[in-house]
Length: 513
Image (cartoon, rainbow, N blue to C red; front, side, top):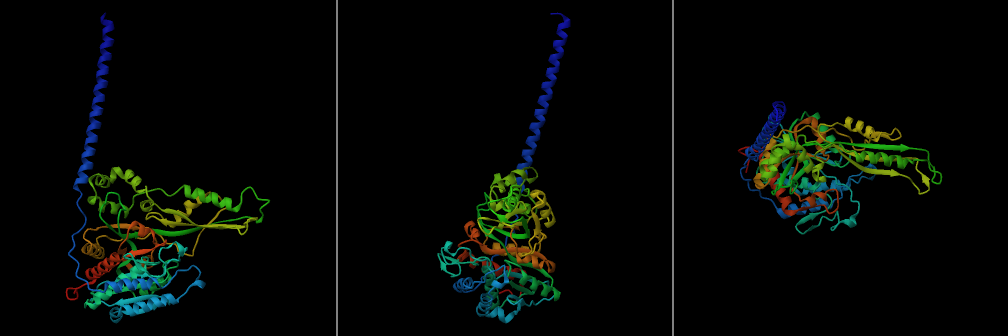
């Protein structure tokens, strides 16, 4: 072999060696990078410490447990039904509930000023001993949604039956349980000689499920009196189980923000006529196609506050594998979003939801309808706006024949501000929950439904949405559905938590029993 032929081969071998060397270097660097990422992931997970502050044990609370159960049952028997058409409104059951409160809680009615607002709503003022302290506002509502099919209930919806350790009926949780736990707690504290340091307002609206005019009237009255509250505690989330895979203890979710709310009306109007001579597209067909496009293109999923804060809070309580994912959202957020989006129960926390709730059109099988309409309800994620929802709806439907407007029966509202989780009120509530139920994990969360608390936004610093009642997934599903119910022990613990919260947020050294 000549020198001329050996030189190219040597050069090729050298070049190959350099390629192999570079490949090994790249592989080494990638391996090192992956190792560093793995170390960072594991380190982040291991460094997570519990965010659950230890709480001192709850003070003993003396109250008649059987009487509390019966009072909720009695409240359920009053059909305080919300109606869209005021011509159908029946005021007698609401006045009956007023009378029930008067008869059942004499001590509260001795120490607190009672006012009837907007005919059927109630405002109580329990004056505090320290006027300089900003007051607290504790609210609930007395109306309930209608029952569509009473035969679907295992216990009649307005019988207020107590069976199998549960109180059954429409409003057993939403929200007559909220009224009862508040008044039972206040009555027990009052009987024990408790006097609040800060003034406490109890506000009971009568039309939360429709217009919210009762709460609006109360909020307007308080604003006229220059009342500005430190906090509102309203209905909302609760203590529940199995909402997050891997968390094997109950989770108390305190709503520190609320989704916005808007209902959009879609209308198509065409010439009516005989069904034997239909146009290429009917009004119903046009509207149905638009609705199908809207439903097929939901809002994108995102992990925003306060949902991200919730995951940060529960991460240290999780088994290591799930803690690893939740502690490293900077890298694994898409994986976490995919996991949460797997169920309706958690997907709704991740985006503005679209729900087609009403569709009307047509009067007879052989008549082409002149006008058809549908209602689409959006629950708006913090960070989105009503204007953006309307604009996106127009873009997705993309049909000028479909007229789009805001349906005003239920006033729209933007997503709420996010309340402070370091405020004394939030800390007092978290500690009260764990004082009564020390095994429970407490976390901030997003309230996905609409509440009366939005009516008070201008006169309060922080709003928290939480009922101190433990509900299973099936019991949560019964709210606004069939067989609404509350367990006896859950209601009684709710009374104890509410009383402990009042002690901690409005107690003084001299007044705490």
